[in-house]
Image 1 (cartoon, rainbow, N blue to C red):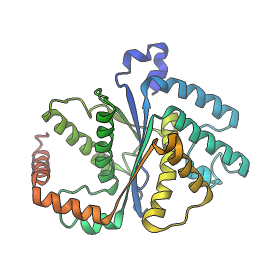
Image 2 (tube, rainbow, N blue to C red; image 1 turned 90 degrees about the vertical axis):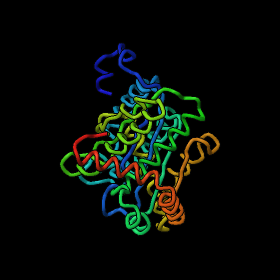
Image 3 (cartoon, helix red, strand yellow; image 1 turned 135 degrees about the vertical axis):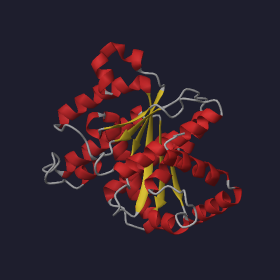
Length: 292
């Protein structure tokens, strides 16, 4: 996005995708029991308007960037430390409103890590190592289906929340692999370039990623409630309900992968064998240095 801001009115010259897909990485921490992938679709033509409105908003409220979990916790080392309840709720509500205003649609998909470890990893030798990666792979499928239903033929641009190369190298490598494998399959059906336009960007620099962060936090808390019966606090409950009821309940597509879903999927994968063979060839070629 900084490239676009630097180019000012020439942003249309470099903006190739009609829709931007902002993706949050909630659930990558090994200590978390649930992994979710959350995506916010925004029309490219609306990004500059969001950035302008976000700048006015942050200057008025006196903060530089928004991080939902830090704000909710009034983290003592953060700029939210001395906020009272009124300001906290006001800002959180405004962040949600901006996400809904500029976001065309939200998607979230959650999975209980223990179910994945028990059902998938022992039976599929080429399964994704990271639960979050599995969620992303299925998220891409949901986004493609949305594109087909909505008659969107142009490739999306995918913006992932930043993954540190030192501490999250393996997780980032798996996302790179998922995108490369998706692009390979797209090439096979004559849709080359479908998954090549993606990057990892710093949330602090991208208002749309900060809106996605708020959505992902609410969805993550709800996923904990759905999978583990973890009680929802008031902010989590109000936030999820606000997103979920937007546009008469059609704006947010929230899905959860159950243990029964996983068992059915693994059984079908083993019986069919095509995906296993595809991944076997992929890993062999990757290991030999040929690439795919």
